[in-house]
Length: 120
Image 1 (cartoon, rainbow, N blue to C red):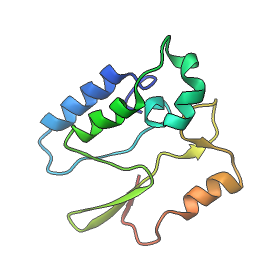
Image 2 (tube, rainbow, N blue to C red):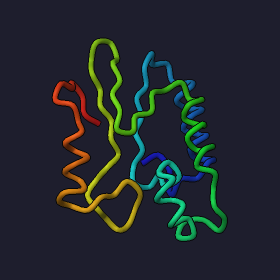
Image 3 (tube, rainbow, N blue to C red):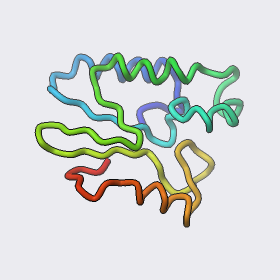
């Protein structure tokens, strides 16, 4: 997680830090507390986290401005390494990017390519 509960200020702070960090490549995935990066979940549960809904489109755009590669069920090649990133985890306390154990999570995990060097 890089936020407490998806606050835009915290995403902006991470984006600023990533932009300034002197690495050539930076790869990021969301965690289960980064609720504004899971719009479908957030649309249903925002009241649990914030007094007014935050802008999920803006949350995602902040990462696009961060000079990083954001992976959500995606693959990136960095210096010849194939990196696959996915935020999904088995259900835990009704947070973002949770799927039920069994078929739901198994299908997500089956989508992970066999030929990856780094799984995040």
